[in-house]
Image (cartoon, rainbow, N blue to C red; front, top):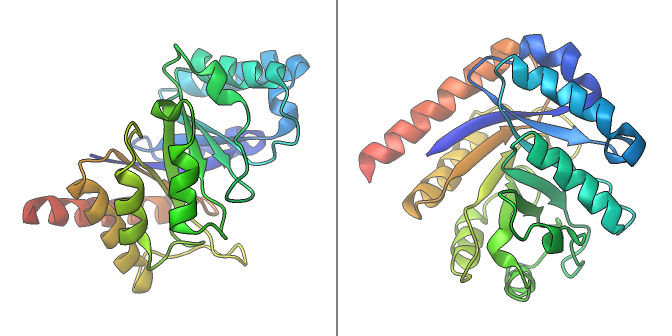
Amino acid sequence: MVRIGVRVPLRELKRLLVEIPENFSLDVLLEPKDYSLESIPHTLEQLDEIAEMGTEVVSLSIEDWRRHDPSICENVIFLAESMDVEYIVFKLRDPVEAPPPLLDFLVGSSVKLSLVPPRTADIIDFKKFLSRLEYRQFVTIAYDIFERYTGQTKDLVEEISNISGLLSIVYLAGMDKARRRICLSSKGIIDVWEVISNLVALREDVLLVLNYGIDRASLMRDYNMIKQIYTSIVEKL
């Protein structure tokens, strides 16, 4: 199954919501202030308003984790569980960096931690890192097709999918290094075709989150293109 979503910073959510088609899920990007104790009620109120409009919030993303504070972990998981989201997405800064102590708090929770490999990560080293995680049954992996792994998707997916206990793979796509939107054409289409094909063959749940400047026409064009790719792949399996 392939689901399609879009990443939106919480601070811009209300402004951009009119541009997001109803058939999209949301990956909401949080800043540190959004999950501080004093901000929890306001953050939850904003997320609740979105949910009441019928839009699915599938994940909360954290890009700037400076403090490995258990209370902050509890705040983030509280937000995730309150909104019934599936994933907390966290980008590692180096291949051997320990993730925030969220894993300890996920025991008994329905939320999973989705780790984004750093750009410099060697595939084999990253696989070893994942294998050492104590609670890896609560971990998924997120890839950025336009960052590190373009052209290496097949090897990466095959290596990581062999780790015992690792759950389904989440897939992210988006901007290039210069923050320019990547159009799903030419080389981009080949990359998207490759990764969806590999993940579908492995019976993985694919969540493809578009991460670029939002406008309704572009989102619908890319949505229809991805659905066509997925249908073609499934028909050939």
